[in-house]
Image (tube, rainbow, N blue to C red):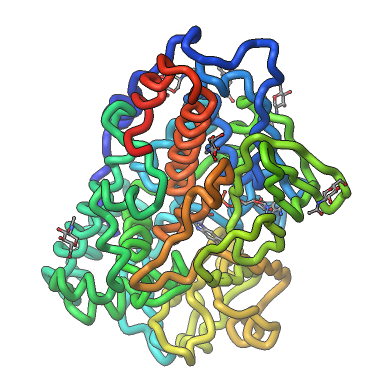
Length: 503
Ligand SMILES: Cc1cc2nc3c(=O)[nH]c(=O)nc-3n(C[C@H](O)[C@H](O)[C@H](O)COP(=O)(O)OP(=O)(O)OC[C@H]3O[C@@H](n4cnc5c(N)ncnc54)[C@H](O)[C@@H]3O)c2cc1C
Ligand SMILES: *[C@@H]1O[C@H](CO)[C@@H](O)[C@H](O)[C@H]1NC(C)=O
Ligand SMILES: *[C@@H]1O[C@H](CO)[C@@H](O)[C@H](O)[C@H]1NC(C)=O
Ligand SMILES: *[C@@H]1O[C@H](CO)[C@@H](O)[C@H](O)[C@H]1NC(C)=O
Ligand SMILES: *[C@@H]1O[C@H](CO)[C@@H](O)[C@H](O)[C@H]1NC(C)=O
Ligand SMILES: *[C@@H]1O[C@H](CO)[C@@H](O)[C@H](O)[C@H]1NC(C)=O
Ligand SMILES: *[C@@H]1O[C@H](CO)[C@@H](O)[C@H](O)[C@H]1NC(C)=O
């Protein structure tokens, strides 16, 4: 499925080099004798680590340039929902896996920190998809691995698949491509130069500015029907995609739906050795004091500062507190109490299986008749969302990744697989359950300096969107902190107002 033409990386770099807006050093009122401010970040995922990175970048020559940054992570490793597992001696992504060619912050992190781009292996890249309706495959495309490998076979197979797709879905496919391209195009506004890009103090304003807000008001199904996509395409191919990427149906919000559709195009990539290394590098290069195995249980605003207490009994004093984790399933006591809209997380059970699928389950005679990616329709009787081959050791011995909405029980796995030698299960509180119209928590949880990066997850939860949200939070902190630090001095206001448009 190649809905995108790859873009040149040079264009990416051109977009990524906005000049930094500097305030002259002598305009700040903080004198060097006063203790440096402390910024505390709860969560070491891509969101929290991006806040730290961009905070260092944006606070040069501001009242925050000497800030101490403390980061708290309840687990013993950084990265959060970016995590690899070792399964059968191989490393696989268990959480956030694929990046889009236009995920420019992720691209920048990889280049900046000398990480390596990993392109999909031939089996992962295979265009062979089967759409399972619970009884039969309603649609199947070819993969290259089925045929003798000649260099030109890739092209032919992809042409044949395009023809197959076209025969089934017709011109709706083109309308689908242009819908995705338009949405991606709107999102690119977040990489515009810093001078022309406002700082947003709420998610709604951020989405309105790029023209994406309306997409959160309607379901994907409504939006696609308005864009004149055939119900067949929506109920089959699009449903397969939203079930794989968000474990949800086309009744999810139009924006999250569009983002998940963008994640099914060509040119997808990941970080060699694990996407979590982006967080590790960002943290390592941002001069942070990292507290691993330190779970924050309370955040109290005590007049002029925040007190963060951990379950270890430690207490930390912070001028700025940043929550960089979804608050829906964690137990953090806020004082004073904060109020945010109720939100449920979609749980995705990721199960790794080594063995071989049971062709009989799918009404087939031989395993080789099964496509490397099995997607499914929205039907409560179908007990899994997708099954894909991660690695082929031999024709009868493979590593698979299965997504389900509930725990994949042994009895289900025994039906699906004729041989199963190894199994690994992970239950993720994966991403929000998306609704339309969507409601958003505020970026600023009180009237002071308590920030919430994951308010943006109701737009769409991806590694890149959380980095984009993290950048905005960093700018918001710098501008709000400076505005207050300098409230006694008029010459610093001009500096602050250059950075911030709507305080
Ligand atoms: C199965 C799955 C597949 C996905 N696939 C993709 C994909 O292909 N592409 C993509 O772009 N995105 C994908 N995503 C989404 C992506 O992984 C997330 O959007 C992103 O990683 C979220 O980053 P974050 O920093 O906001 O949150 P998190 O990564 O969840 O980070 C929050 C951190 O805070 C820590 N924490 C929580 N509470 C506390 C506390 N009280 N004290 C201290 N620490 C605490 C947590 O341990 C965690 O490390 C996927 C997610 C899942 C689960
Ligand atoms: C901040 O980031 C921009 C864009 O990547 C870069 O040009 C600039 O040098 C950075 N500044 C600092 C102080 O890190
Ligand atoms: C980048 O990584 C490569 C290989 O991992 C290494 O040879 C090279 O020295 C690294 N460069 C920098 C600037 O760190
Ligand atoms: C969003 O919807 C509003 C009200 O329906 C409309 O006025 C506006 O033009 C729409 N914006 C975009 C970008 O489509
Ligand atoms: C972090 O940086 C230090 C040196 O500054 C280095 O020794 C260490 O290996 C780095 N860690 C990671 C995870 O990159
Ligand atoms: C946090 O810890 C401090 C020091 O132990 C204690 O005085 C305070 O009551 C704690 N706050 C909360 C909300 O538990
Ligand atoms: C800024 O300072 C004023 C007065 O000291 C205070 O009331 C206000 O809450 C502060 N704002 C922030 C964002 O801290």
